[in-house]
Image 1: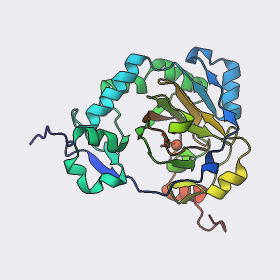
Image 2: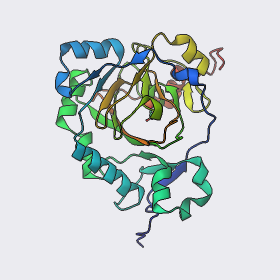
Image 3: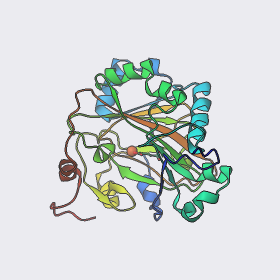
Image 4: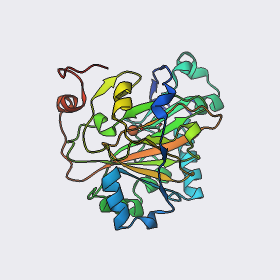
Length: 294
Ligand SMILES: O=C(O)CCC(=O)C(=O)O
Ligand SMILES: [Fe+2]
């Protein structure tokens, strides 16, 4: 039985965001803005060294206006069930629409989606970015040898959209921490300090940090305050990308503007990355048995 209404296909898993308190503004106090390269062609040996030293590179002019509009159209088609999906594809909506998810207007539906998960091989407009040969060459150059796509996600932060607290992405991945993944976070709208751009701690990508379940699976707020030497905001133009090490602490504050901030985020693992058990990940990133509190 087919269902062509505004609700997604039966193969789409629907989840809801947890509501969470807002963060203290100090958590995103910053010392400046991340330096931004004008294009991927600017990545030379000194930029590779910068990445190894700092754990990130911010680059503008990576996606073309056409790729941006295609990606947004593809996300919209996925959100409205206009392209066929299959598990593990999932949509996460904001907590406030839980009771009326099946009666949202198309506009409300689009505006209340917070995450689109696992769309590898569902839409050629997204797949062409995921497998872009120029991006794959950059990943290889940064030490992610023979990169394999590991996770695909879109993060849609509307006006008042909530924070993604400080964390290391590797704390979510069952992969040996010696085998670093690389994240590509693409701004589909201008990502600004006031609408929830990425914030990073340069150079803090060398060691795992303990995570706690608080507003999210995150680094404790007090740890953030005590560990930070430098915090930089990384605003990007639409089509810009933040390339970052899976141990780089990063977060995005609440969107206090009236502008939406959409992003694509892909993670790649080197082909030789070793999987670890969930329990081993928790032994590294969890707090249990470590005499630590948050
Ligand atoms: O787009 C954002 O707000 C941050 C997303 C992020 O860091 C993540 O999902 O790991
Ligand atoms: Fe992240």
